[in-house]
Image (cartoon, rainbow, N blue to C red; front, side):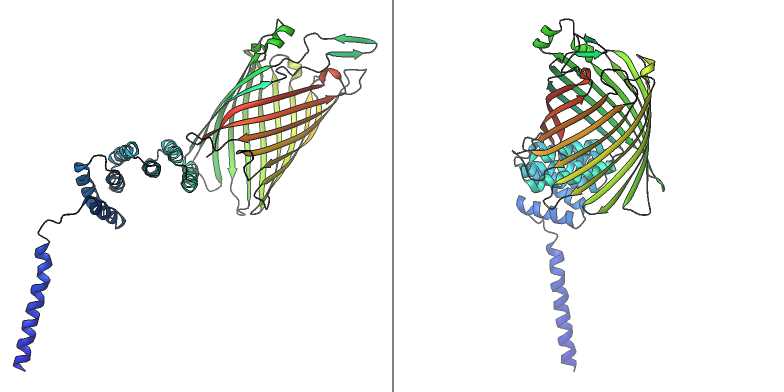
Length: 457
C-alpha cells in the first residue's frame, strides 16, 4: 500500500512538471513568417480580439507598409476598437495599394462599412459605387448593389441628378399644317411650323426623409428641371427671327409627402402636397399646387395594383384666363411575368376647368410599359406606349366643331449596363409622338432620340 501511494506521488509530481513546461516555453519569443502572421491576425479578428490583431498588423506594416492583408486587418481592428479615423486611413491606403480587382473591391467595401457605422451614408454609397467599379465579377457587383440599397434605406437624404441631350424634329410643338379655317376664310400662321434642333436637359433633386412614427413617415423633396434649346440651321433659315432661348423652360417643385402604415402590410397609402412654379423664356409662366391621395395593394409576390385621386390648381402669369382647375383619377396594374419581364398597365381620367376655350377639356388615357429581363443588344430594354384623348368643352373653331385630340406616344429606352463607371451607365431613348386633331392647327408630330446617363444601383 505504501509503495502504491509513493508511486502515485511520483506520477503526480511528474505530471505537474510536464504541465509547467509549456508555460516556461511561452516565455521564449514565438517567431512567425509573414504569411503565418497574417493568418493568425485574421483568426484573432474572427475570435473578436481586435487589439491583438491590431498589434500583429502593425508589426507586419513595419516590415512592409504596403502589405494589403495587414492594412485590411488594421482597418477592421480599428473599426471594432471604435477608432474610425484610423480605420478609414488604413482602408484608403489598402484601396490605393491593392493590385488585384478583388482586393480593391474588398477595400472599398470595408471602407463603406466604416462610413456606414459613422452615419455618413452618402460617402458610404460612393464607396460602394467604387467597389462595384473595381470588379467585373457579377457576384461581387450584386453584393455591392445589395448593400447600396440597404445603406440608401438608412440614409435620410437622397440626391438625384440627370443630364440629357435630345435631337428633336419639333422643338416648338409646331403643327403639320399651319392653316385653319373659320367660316369661309382660311388663315395662315407663318410662324406655326415645326422647328428642329437640340434639347439640352438637366435636373437635380434632393429628398429628406424624417424619423418614422407609429402612424407612418414624412418626407420632403425639392426638384429643379431646366431645358435649353439650340435650333438647327434649317430651322434658323425657315424662321430667322426664332431663337432657341424662346423655348427655354425651367421648373421648381417642392413636395411634402405623408406615407401611412397599415396593419395589413400588403397595403400602403400616401398623401402628397406639391407646390411648383414654371418659367419660359426667362419669364414667369405659371404657379400651381396639387393635392393627391394614393393607395397601393400587393396582390401576390408578383402582382401589385394602385390608384390615386388628385386636385390641381394652376395660376397662369402670362394670361390669367388660361388658369386651370383640374380633378384627376389614375391607376395601374404591375405584374412580374414568368420570364422575369415586368408588365405595367395604367389609366388616367381628368376634368380641366378654365375660362379659356383652349384649356377647358375632358381627358382620358391608357398606358403600358414593358421591362425586359434579358439583355437586348447588350442593354436593359424598357418599352412604353400611351394613348391620350382630349375633348374640349367649348366651341372655338366653328368650321371644325368641338376640338378633339388623340395623342399617341411610343418610346424605347436602352440602358447599356456593360459600360459602367461608378454605377452609372449611358442610355439612349427613342421616342415618337403623334397628335391627331380635327383642328389642323393642333395636328403635330415629333421624333426624338435622347442620350443620357442613369444609375444602375
